[in-house]
Length: 244
Image (cartoon, rainbow, N blue to C red; front, side, top):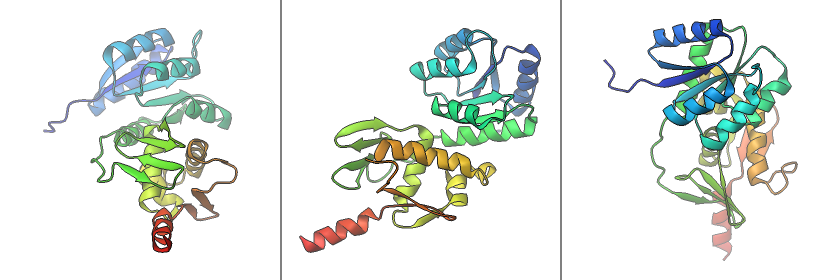
């Protein structure tokens, strides 16, 4: 029997039948399930119970899922999966921009939801402490691996857990092309191996945080049809030292 404590998941949906459906399957998976029927109740349960993950429906009366998510992010970094009946790309982007960690479109199978939950929880598992706490890219950019921050022109900027994992793998493989499939598997999990749109979106988020001009990047380069490459800062540093 596993000695790991059970994960607590908060399910937020105004449809009782959907809550029962999700709760039943989460119970079968061995999770502890909390319920909320509207946004305000969800905020109270996030604050009072500090769940390990939130499953949040977008279409709710009053305070909808997007506003609920925005207010959750003011008080917590808990991972959030949004549920939506729409397959519209704009809804997915809006949710991710507000801080969601994944999305599932209704209707969905219990197997799909379970897979997404496991993948998101894996991304939030503590990682071993990096040997180098701060990696200096150049005079403008540093990466604080321990605090999961970037330092841009002396200003510290927090990274979301997924942004950090993506940047970590790019920096660790600086100078090499990281294929789409490799990044998706390492950062999100094998369930996402074909979700190139998700990868492009998070590359955009990172560029907005670290690039002086995100439209003309000098750190994260696109290798069309292949993947992404982080600037080979180590070789550049060696060349500068050799010429000093």
